[in-house]
Image (tube, rainbow, N blue to C red; front, top):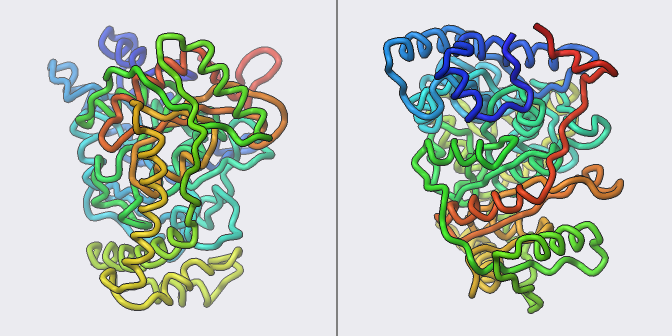
Length: 458
């Protein structure tokens, strides 16, 4: 059996090119890993559905390679995608029973691009239902379709979300790389919680056509992987650049009592001597969470109903709510207050109430980031306020593992958060490589024995 634990894309590609193994053997190895971590005692509920055509896809790609036809940088590389992303012939459930039969008529534009580059679609990853927009008390990583996703590093702690399965699957090497989506923190938070790299691109950089939406102003799909290089490979394969010059860096001043954040940024400042660092100590606009919340409520209702219509479903958000109400214990055990609040919004996206919420949300986030980036290429920190600013403003951001410090949030797992201006992902990746070189990824021990990994077998 092909060894896949912690192997990066470059190594896997080299193995395929040199005939060390075939795309079929590689795909079967990942499917075995998925099977191992989908059964007791190590069932992490990271994968909601395995693609029954995965081996056939790998076979076709291997035959192409034998004819000296290589589609792209991901030829024969197995990838998992979040279960709000359409894959032709597979259901897109977003974790909810009401959409269990929502079979995608065609691939999303993102999956089309991945296939064009030669990726094997292994299956779908679990997620917080409706990208964590069903109930405000539902645990991260829980869905009635997929169960509760289990953190890859600390099983008793949250996997975070909503791209919970994508974060856990990447951490446990259930695929070479995974795809998540983010509206606010849904890539970066599970990346930190599972000690992997998560890139949230500029809103609009990657197509969201064929992705079940939350809010068009903030939704962005992006790659999650074990290394910056793997994430950069996927980004570059889909048309992005990965190298740019970075000189000046703003450090987002940690809160006075945030010992871990202070330690992290101090290490970055001390060890990365080739960059010019300046701490930002000025005042920033107060975050307007209420405005963002209202914007999300309006957009979810309209975007979700449009998605259903595009998929030929004779349903609306109102119908989904009624379906759940008929059996709350099974279909919505944590309630559905967010769906109800979204359904109650009135007027279209031109209504003054929405326009005002949209303006206020953009103002605080964009103003904050522009102040931080005034004289810098990127802003760096270990504070999730940066994640919020980038999400609400639509700017690109990345989370890079940086080690473990103490027994606090996420088990003390620390990450460096980097934000850049729109469409400057190359600057993020350039600086992220430097951070990765001085940081440390915590490798999961789930499934280990005293002798070896239980799933490392010939």
